[in-house]
Length: 304
Image 1 (cartoon, one colour):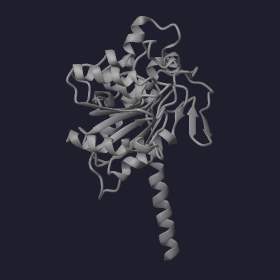
Image 2 (cartoon, helix red, strand yellow):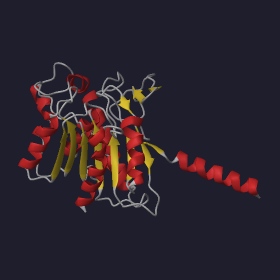
Image 3 (cartoon, rainbow, N blue to C red):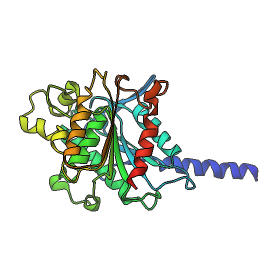
Image 4 (cartoon, rainbow, N blue to C red):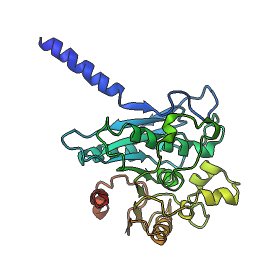
């Protein structure tokens, strides 16, 4: 009997695991040609993924006893070249679960893949799809469909803010026929951690800009993806973290976005730390900076 119970438990565990990673496009990935390209995963101090061919959502749910009904889709950073998948993804999801918040780590396509037809649209297509999938399954996952946010780190912050300012962009064009596309992709709030925001060369992160739209992008594209210029009265409430000594993505990126939010009277909060640099994830052992997750938790609950 004990052995039978153990087998049942293992089968149940494997069943849960099989539901944990969801392909975004099971009917076929849009804006992508068939190819022999392979995804690369390098595990060292940080799990780095590049050349994503099959974008997915990895699901992290809190216990039913602790769930708050809130949820966040997480976009790891990596300059639109790689995804720091655990450092700015699954580690963050586990922290959210400890606070009763459902989390979904987005493995999105990166624009340097040769298989992409229009590379600049692929990350936004995946982010829109992820938001719609979470909203569609809200009841199943004990989520309030009007309390689903988007979060991003560095270039992932650029993607998150792109979704927050371009959520209603028809990125699928002629293939926009799936029933999911009738569901709103607008996040209910945004969390941007040391984000890339502007493609103005005075403050931009050149690597992210070049990876997404190329070195010779038109002024129209530069403006379109400078998300501080795209804020409107319908942009979601936003929480921003940055460090003044960030030499990778200048802190002015967050300031520009915050100023645009204030201009449009969007509820927003900016925490600018004097030190910390870039790429610190949860900022463990980073002094005062390691308090930012708790500040975020408190802010999320002001949105109720």
